[in-house]
Length: 444
Image (cartoon, rainbow, N blue to C red; front, top):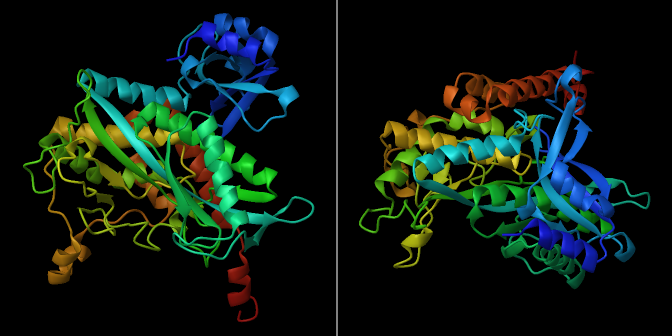
C-alpha cells in the first residue's frame, strides 16, 4: 500500500519531472494528461479537471468537465523515459466536478461489481495470459504487417536478438512492479505470450492496461511494432487473453472454489460460478471480444473455442478447470478462453464476475463437462451445445438481451458501448474488400 507522502518523497528524491495521469475510455484506450511535478501536492489535494466531451462515450458538451482523482496504489516510475525527463505514472478514477463517480468510468464499473462480491463475502482474483505479435518496421517507422519479427513457433528458442526483445519486455514490466510468471514464444511467427501473477481483479486490470503501453514502448524502441489485434493476418493464429479466475473469502483469503473431495476439485460455489459464466457467455463475449476482427480469431483453433462447454482436459472447451498438483487446492481456478487482448480489461473483469455471481445467486445447475473421451463416444453432444456468436453484430444482440451483463456495465457504459460497436459493424459492412474485388469484379 502506497501513501501520498511516500509518492511525494519519491518525486523529490528521484527528481521526477512530470506526473502522467492515466485514465481509460470505454473502448479500453489509455488517455493521459501530463502535469509538471511541482503540482504533485495539488494533484492529490484537488484532482485535475479536464474536458471529457471528446472521449468515446464522454459527457455531453453542456456537462463536459470531468475530474481526475489519482489512485495512490497505481504509482509507478515509467522506465522508458530519458533520465532528465523522468515521469511518475498514476491511474485515475474519473469523477464529476462535484466529486461524484462518473458513470462512464470503466474502472468504476469494475469496482461496483467487486463491491457486490464483497457484500457476498467474496474477493475476486484473476491472472491473465497476454498474447501479442511483433512486426518489423521500415526505415520510416511504418509497421510492416507482412513481416513478423521472427519465423519460429511454440516454445522455440530463437536467436539472441529475438530472445532479448522479450527479456527487455519482462524486465520493463518487472520494473513497473508487475509479477511476471513466465514468457515464451507462441505458435505464430512473431507471436509471444507473457503470463502474469494472480492478483486482485482491479490490480490485474491495471496491469493489463499498463502492459499494453509498456510492451508497445519497448517494441518501438527496438524498431518493432507490437500489436494486440486479435487476428492480424489470415495465415497467422489469433492472439488471446486467457483469464484465470477464483473467488476467495474476504476474511481469510481461503479459495472458495476448492473442494478436494469433488471429482474436479471444484466446490459448490465454484460450480455455480462456472454455470453462471456459461449461461451468460453469449452476451459477455461482446465485451471480451469487442472488435469485428475478434470474430476472425474465435473458432479458428482450440485456443479460441466457441462451444459453450466446460471441461478439465479438453482445451476446446470455453472454460477449463486446470489440473493441480496434489494438495494444491489453494490454486483451484477457472480458465476462461474466449477473451482477447483488445478488450477493455476493467469491463472484461466486471462482466466475468457479474456472470459468475449471478450463477451463485441463482444456484444455477452446472451441465455435464464435455471431455474429449466423452465427445468421442457421443458426437451429438457437441451438436447440441450452444456456440458463441459468429460475429460482433450477433454478440451485440445477445448483450442487448442480457440484463445481468448490461447491469454490470451500467446504463451509461452499456448504451455507449453498444452504440460505438454498432457504428464499427456498420462501417465494416460498407467496406469493399480485396477478397470481394478478386472474386466478383471480373465475374459479374
